[in-house]
Length: 416
Image (cartoon, rainbow, N blue to C red; front, side):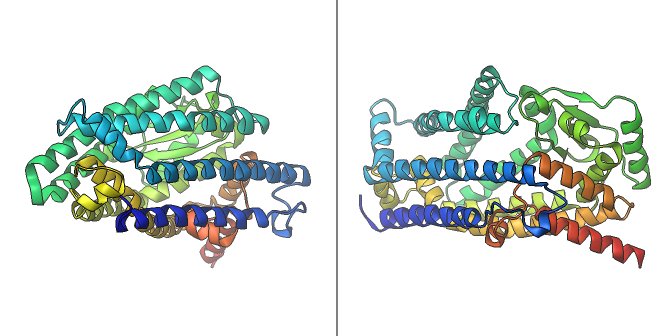
């Protein structure tokens, strides 16, 4: 059991935990009871103290939950419990589809049960304490059960397809699996708002009035065909606001959280939508999707090199090489590559955010965008002064201060 693969996996798990906690520590060390000069005018003293308390509460709880998860995975690895589960299930079935489905189904259920109290505490203690939570225990548990249901149905169907491809395509497995997952990703991209979102939230078309007219006026100026503008009832769970763009072609739609409409004025909302439109106009969504599909292909190719590996199976405590143990072992070994890939994707994402902000500025909406971003950041008690290494490693969006600086630079260049 304790072979080379085992020690590599343990080292990867340990280093990943240490690195994540180091970044969290750097953020905690950056905290200060005195408001930094660059945040004056954005946070007042009272709101800043509240933000620091919120950040501290989340950071300390993240240390507890992260440490617990770390101890659990180490315990499971050291005692070969993944292999034990595989051997136990083989007493009931060794079918090439049923066995991995049962294995991952039990693994998912145990993980969800372990995560449940942490999610409950976050929602009903931390978020509740700082005035964000609007969900009831009934909504929380309903979301939890629906999430498991979707994972079982969608994940089960996708996993079954991949297993069948592995069983019948041999050396070409990674190509066909890549195609299958890519088609699935495209399907979800087109129909996510129509199929998945209604299970959790109500979406209604934005009613006629000043806001819709202002949005359509902007869309006309931007030569952007936008008919599908929806409002989602995000306030049933949280006071935090958001907006997003989804779909392609005739399926594209803008979705506004009702909390966003409540917090921002019309011009600020139009500026936020101009930013989202910028992503579409700059083809960020298409490029990101292509990059994601390319990354998926590379991942499946590397996975194909590990499938059926006896030593990897033994490293997890198993005896018989199997698809599910190989996939699980690979996912643990792949963590460093996944982290590096995520790092470059975040760099690209931050670049895209700057470009989308600049696009909004072209329509004279720079000041409104800055004003809206300030309101949203303060309302959600965002950390506006994170450690630069944390921003570099984790952030898919630039910080508010970085965005404000770039927007003002864009406006100056336009004036010239």
